[in-house]
Image 1 (tube, rainbow, N blue to C red):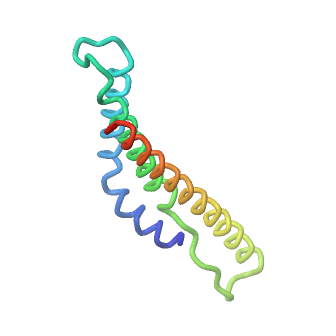
Image 2 (cartoon, rainbow, N blue to C red):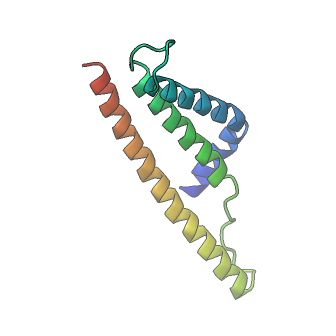
Image 3 (cartoon, rainbow, N blue to C red):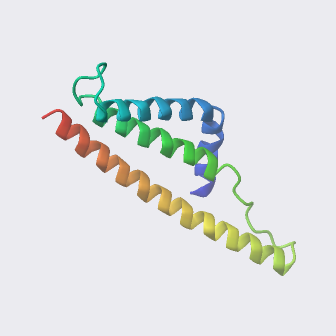
Length: 119
């Protein structure tokens, strides 16, 4: 699982600047929708810009968190190095499971917000 997340992170790492810029634009859209503004008269863009900002930030965090995954444990190393690798890989597995749960929760939130906005 963490190797697959690392492959995705390597692809996303190439466009991490674009992800931050798009998250910033969506954040500006959220702020403009909340503040009295002559450019945006209603809050029709609030849900879409909020969802976009969350998705771009999740993709950016994926590109940063899983870029450097520790290698698998091999038997030729000392017990201290093997223990260190197992602990670091175990932490990455926990982080990967938490990230997948966060992504699933964001997917459900996106579905609910889209359902509310189109009603």
